[in-house]
Length: 484
Ligand code: BG6
Image (cartoon, rainbow, N blue to C red; front, side, top):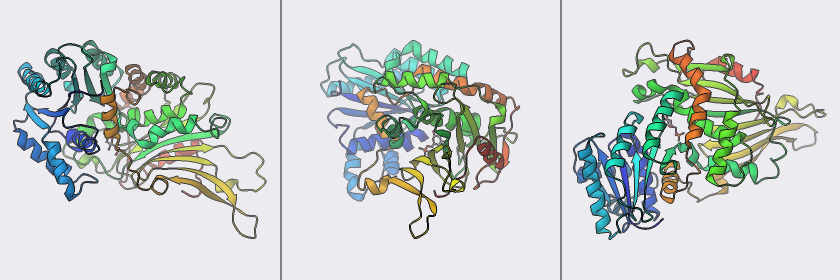
């Protein structure tokens, strides 16, 4: 059911993810009326021994600075915090989880919820190493007592493992305890407005249908840049690196949506079936189509080992072996400590045959989807330069969200995804077979990096990354085009 008593349990309540993403998203949902005070209770669970009020005070400190919060929000913030309770315990202790269950049950009874009809959402804002034990504890101690339409769902975050084998092991362990419809694997890129727009753009517009293929498209770039380094997360980041942190999940999700065939319908299973198919058509990554980088100064972080081989930058070409895409490089590029913060998709078309205007040197048609910052969709095209001459120039057909949708608030990814979890909609979550196919693509390369066979090139922080990456881009066919 979508109504009735709802308990949201944030495990790892004192950690970074809970503080930066989970609680702010819950607060936004509450502010907008999606979490009703007469139905909802939020439980924080972590090892730290603190009281309810201590957790509330900490949360107040984070949430007061949230976007859109104003002094007149403090009342609403206080009423939100009244819904939050705290239980302390370890992640493998039956005692802790029994106590948690008791608290949840008391809340359900106080809301006159019929046993078994209530909803329990467990959000694991925790490192994956504790997922198995936490899932076991939830299963053993905290499930709904009977099934009167209520449910128990768990939300987990990447990294789901380190490679194909460890990911499969984790999936098997969790899969023995919960069924797939109970497991919500978050990739927060799937909650971004323009990522959610991709299927609509592709399949609801006549323009694109005949052009979206190898006959017309020369290359596709999917780019993620950050203008800051690992900043205090060096210890975490060093165990994973940019491929596991960004490319294997966030950029790959964008890649599927650009490359997949039209699903039978927009039902979650139909969409995810198509994603898996396109992944299974990806050819093995070639060594010569990979450039790795590590920014200078990365190892100055005391939590990063002095001999770290971890890439903070990577450009990787993926090639799809199917009728639509044979021969079209998909260039996935991600880097930390670069010159700007941006995520975008650039679909570059082939040159116009028979160039009577001699405009080729100005560049090609491009279709660009900027995911962030300042969401926009634009097409770069050649037009006549206004004036008496018959000269040409590059210009843009520009749909900038800020102008076109003034006053419309674009929801945060986590907000949307948590709401989907409550509603039971798995469209924007990662299915187990999808995860496996994603690891299959990157595992050989990751092992080569882990073994020190592939080494990152140094690059200057605040720049474009290693020059070799631009060379690879040019080799893959990308032509620098004027304009933005
Ligand atoms: C996270 C990564 O998943 O995504 C971080 O672990 C990265 O390293 C972040 O900074 C980027 O998310 P966004 O939404 O700011 O692009």
